[in-house]
Image 1: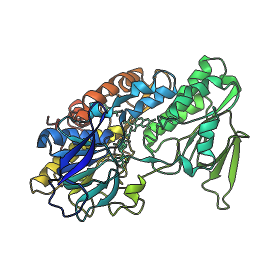
Image 2: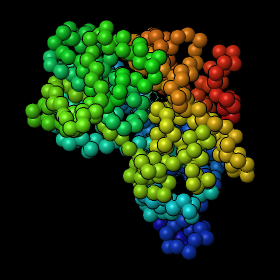
Image 3: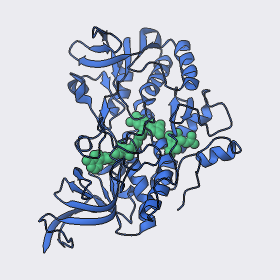
Image 4: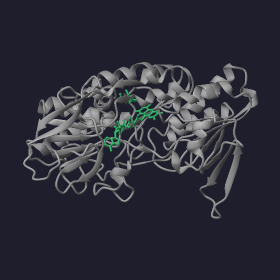
Length: 453
Ligand code: FAD
Ligand code: UQ1
């Protein structure tokens, strides 16, 4: 029996054709079967698919990814700061996904892990032997009353966390002449938590350089208990905000934006009487609440919070052993970054390969390694690196809690090249081996090796 199918080519063209249904399923839906299905073609999915497509060969791996565009999201900090553009941060999805894998340009709409199938938004059902889930986080702008409207209508309200709104940030920095510039951070796990404050340091330097700093209050209203979770780096950041006269207000969570009166209403998280505080704003950079994608939340793969329920060391699913996770959508309790994905990708490669070979998936352990390049201006950066317990895991034999120009160049010039040319091609598994080398065996990932390519 032949079915009509719509395929997306590598150039992004849609091709409609009849294909033979080779499935053994009795269902009327088209059922395809892959040895490995990767759900999501962002940082984690592209990295995992690249590794396994070259290992397993053509036609064995499929990537389920609806988006036509792949973004290097860390660049959005510089887009907000006016030194890069969104197009600098993007590539066509068809150009970055591995050529040996099949790209199914659709989204997952339902997971049935008992039967090892996923239903796609185009109606197809995909059967898999093994699955890697890497769907990232959903941006919940709608959870803040008035925010979606403010982002559409108020030029002073912006957000570096979305390709749609990041282009508003620099014009808003240019436009503000006086009053309050407010930067927020929500009360939930988010990707690159540091990016909430990176743009604030850039903005503060920009105001200074343009002679308007004296007329602008720079305010960080964060849901967090402190400026940063790791004391070694918090110490430096606290000194910076003191020296640069930046106001830090902890345990404040943005609840409502009234763009008609330019008011931002925050809930005081430690108040027993649900107290609120209203700030007038002349510039408002919002980091939205984030959560696991709704499809994942509604699936048997989720934990009680909706994240992919994995073993935080092996990255294998807690209940469905042929399912693994990588990246922001999992419940591994680390700070969610691309750097974390780099380290996870080596563990995933070793553990999933072993599992495919009939061995246990506990060959290697992810230690929670993550890194946050805390850009503190147009030429400085504190390169934070740490593990699950907040212990610093620094790569370079220098004190990385200091602001450094070298680390700024690492973040701005070297990381994007490493991302496009190594990480998402499956050839960068984080700096663990280099850390061990540079520190002569002190620290480093327990069983790290150089990427197998
Ligand atoms: P993503 O890369 O977001 O990919 C998820 C993919 O899943 C998307 O392509 C999406 O289309 C797809 N998807 C969603 N739903 C479905 C579905 N139903 N079916 C199929 N596919 C689906 N990290 C660093 O290491 N260093 C930094 O300096 C840094 N700075 C940052 C600054 C900003 C402003 C931001 C926003 C992020 C930053 N990050 C940084 C974080 C980093 O970008 C993310 O942690 C990383 O991209 C997460 O990768 P992921 O694969 O988990 O998710
Ligand atoms: C990293 O490995 C990485 O992947 C290429 C990034 O981009 C997403 C990073 O931003 C960082 C900081 C790292 C960590 C690497 C080093 C050398 C500190």
